[in-house]
Image (cartoon, rainbow over all chains, first blue to last red; front, side, top):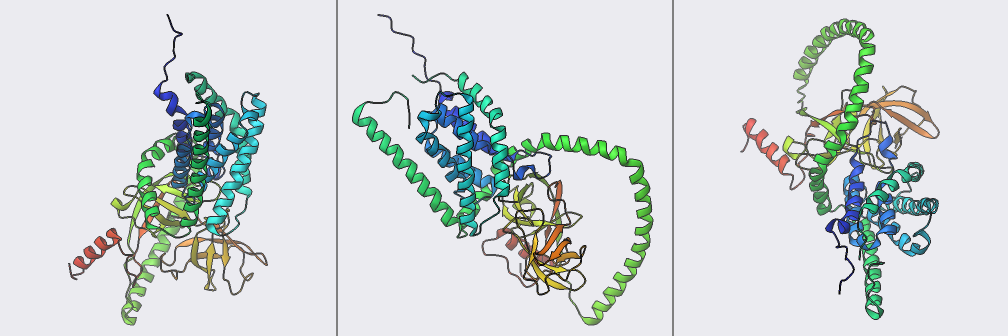
Length: 170
Length: 302
């Protein structure tokens, strides 16, 4: 009896989501020759966690997201734990809204991201305010939020290409 | 949360609960880290310093394209302005020659007065040059990473300057890389003197372009353009470093425009300067080595 051909699971299928999240964290180090840009640069890790949490949740472990958040804090010099909290909030929200966000049009995906990244922005602001014991002006975070939502389609398109190139898990 | 080959029945439920438990545990861990971060812990400092060295090559590589673009635009701009700049520089050289003669005379006179009064001048320290390789702060932090660390003699708390004035101070030191907290960071506090009045104040960053002055006795009594320099009273930064100038002075407070364009830093210098009478923090091996070396040079105990 001849069985149906089984597509073997490749090692890169498992690590690709987390690797791209870590890559997005390292993008914080990119030097852009525009004065003041880095203060409001888009939150690439939030985009990466959001996309993979929808498309390949099984390959994005919570511990990996937690470590990526800590790495972000260590690179940025922000209070340790704030980045992890924001990224876990994104993953938790997507998990709760999985049915709504999965297999929908790109417009729904983008709208969902606008809500999710707003939650991430509020969590980040709250974490920094808690750590510094002072309520900072939310405007720089607001600017970053607008840029993050505006640039989401570009990174989502890139991640979509990667996701489509990966074999589906059995 | 997984959708992959779901095991049926009870096993799947157990897995689901374990995942939920792990998620809540990691959320609690994040909160705990935030709460612990309010207490300055040495392990977090060591972890950050170690990571700085690890990410430095990546930061350096990621800064290259941006630097190349900025350098190219800079060279085009410079070429266009070359003739005018040449004329200006010639005039400035003549002015500086005159001022240098006067300064030589003042320095000689100053030395003689100091001898008469018996004033001891403390070591002004050496300068360590370093390139800025990244500014990864984000919306709530104003820091930059520089390519110099313990190995180059950099130590925590040192003042970082450019030819224009104060940039900030060193907050984390790795072996080859350090983090500089800019004077505009919300956690930055700088003891300063304002204008010719000698009024002391604390300049506080606000994560905005213009830091403000705190603890002033005569708020609003400053003129626009009054110069602000470090006072040295914080026991950390050397006195007399240019910080900026007053741009707003009124009932809402006094705002300072930094002397240095902090959004476009290329090279900086770290002042290796020991404040007289201060001991190095315990465990600061570089400081201990430097102190031993200085003792040896001064003929003190080895």
